Amino acid sequence: MFTFPLLLTIYAGFTHAFEADHLLAVSNIVSQRNKIKLAVKDGLYWGLGHTSTIFFIGILMILFKAGISERSFHYFEAAVGLMLIVLAAYRFIKFFRSKKIVVHAHGHQHENTEGEHKHLHVHVGEKQKHQHTHSLAYGVGLVHGLAGSGALIVIVMSQIKSPADGLIYLLIFGGGCIAGMVLAAGFFSIPFSKKLMQAKGLQRFLIITSSLLCLLYGSKVIYENLLA
View 1 (cartoon, one colour):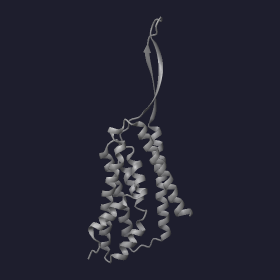
View 2 (cartoon, rainbow, N blue to C red):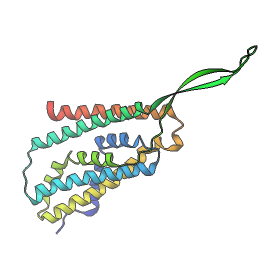
View 3 (cartoon, rainbow, N blue to C red):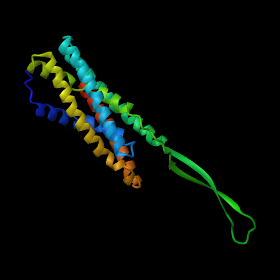
View 4 (tube, rainbow, N blue to C red):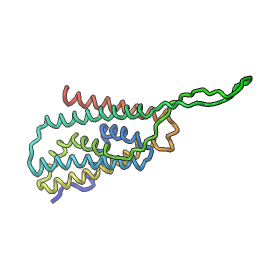
């Protein structure tokens, strides 16, 4: 019989979505959205990617009895740290590339002169691009599923005797994780919604801050798992 309480399993997955590395990654992803609906979809795809990886590793370890060393999971964690650094760099590049220089001429006439004069004006604007693909969120979720998956599956294997029950547990856990990440993505997307887009200074501050935190935390994860 399946011995893990259903609500407890969902709760464990839900709270797992709110770990620091998860929140930093999703905050960077949704910072490029101006609609909460798109950000929520990012959270959904992140959760699906995360669950896909955990379930795949679960199949290897629970059904096929594949042995994965503890050291391997340190490398998995380091891969997540590297992904956070790459994600931060990607967001920085996108942010600065979104700035464009607009050069145009204004025509006007001075007093005591004949004819119209034109003066060049330079403005720094933002390119408006609509990007609705959620493949980035899914890919980040796939990599994130590596972090902590070993400890989770060891717990499942030690508590649940039936392989089928173990895989069901992982799926329920993943469902809770998806729900948590959908909520987190929607919440973090609020500062970047259309209604708050007018506050450009605040928006720039949030984008740069979230990217810097992502960069620093990713470096910390790599250090702790490979160098410490």
